[in-house]
Image 1: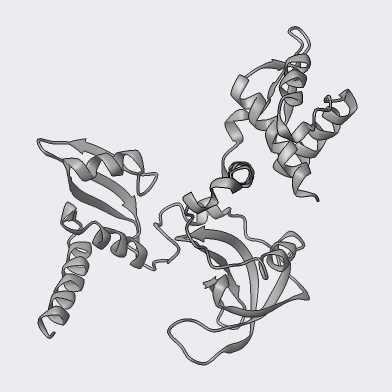
Image 2: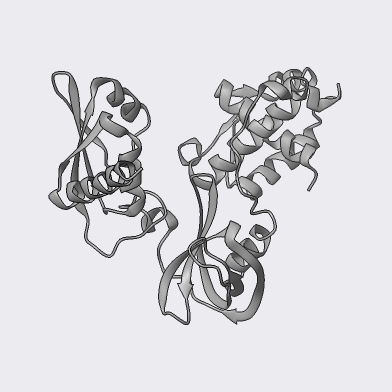
Length: 297
């Protein structure tokens, strides 16, 4: 599908979202004034085709109110997840392409490419087919070949794409970073997807790593300045804040994972662990080892 056509779909969605409700005449006038139209009107049949394509691609319906002759997003409350991510990504991509003249003034985060393997993984997920690949993790110099996986979920975290699935040989769910793949093939063997979504799978986790322990009640203490950042961008959906004099206590209900420990350490002296004792001990142990390394220099 042409990128220009996708940008047109996104434009229609964004415009209707921005206005809430809009007539076809008003939408058409805005369309003719935007660069994507090339000065051409938005024909009735074209708009109908766009509506159908938007629902098929994004799962978002554009409704019509015959009483007011206005169009609106019929399921606006459901635009999170994959659909929302796609819309935001393509919208940003479109804006950046229009900003080519100031490209030397815009810096983006580098994301290791997953373009080579994503299409095969998505196809295998869609058709419930196992994948076979070779993999070279950072902590090993040799490549593991012939890994057979039931691909359950895809997730992007900290600028990397990850595939989560059931390793048939090891008989357990494992996580693999796509930038460490060497090759991949879709097999003829099918599998049954367990009745769980990616959101449910990571419900009690921070990051991409898993935990064999139970859910813990965690309390972090943040100074008043850092509390503003945590308030604006919560670490987890379970986050609850208790504002105190000069600091805040943030409460969570989640697993203790390697990724979460690393996140706490990244805050330096701005955030400290109050509870539970095992999480506090893990953070203190890392800090002591780091200090010991510096003392040896």
